[in-house]
Amino acid sequence: MTGKFDSRVVVVTGGTSGIGLATATRFAAEGASVFITGRRQQELDAATRKIGGRVTGVRADMSKLADIDRLYDAVQQKHSHIDVLFTNAGGGSMLPLGSITEEHYDDTFGRNVKAVVFTVQKALPLLRDGASIILAGSVTGSTGTAAFSIYSASKAAVRNLARSWTLDLKDRGIRVNVVSPGPIKTPGLVELAGNDPAQQQGLLDHMAAQVPLGRVGNPEEIANAVLFLASDEASFIAGAEFFVDGGMAQV
Image (cartoon, one colour):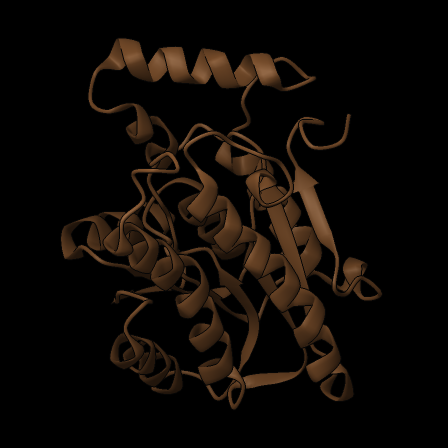
């Protein structure tokens, strides 16, 4: 590893599995002091042990403002600023039009939009000028997906937040970008097919068939993109959406 994030302070929400865990692991390996969040203490403890390095786990549901405050209180106990914020926490479930409920809507937008808005807003006093914010988007924000309209709409909202916040924060030189994965083999993805391994593999095979590269991605490939967007090499990239999707939304 190059140590390119030595002495930098990084916050990764939803860092206990999948993309968040892979990204936090890469940041820690590159020398950063990393804070991760998770909703379940046992998984949070396991993730901090796996990541190693200078990592701190904070139990938090990012859709709850009091939990966001607790996260930043934990940061301030050790550091005076944040260099990189990756709002990875979120998720959703599948329901077709005609079956959408208020609870489904509130849960999805609470996790994917409300949580992002207040995670970023409450970080502003700690974010140093020139910091990098990366929002977790999705290829579904740009493509139609049957029975996934509410999740897709929430990710489309995230895309516009990056555009608007780039203007709001331009005087501080804070860069806001979106990384939008295609299908990535994570617990959150395979669980959409339930607990049957055969159905889970069927879902992965179906999604792989939609990707021009002919496969689903892995969390480390998203981590690579996040670290690039957070790095000095991306110093003139702002308000952009980086698709890491094997070409799924491109051709």
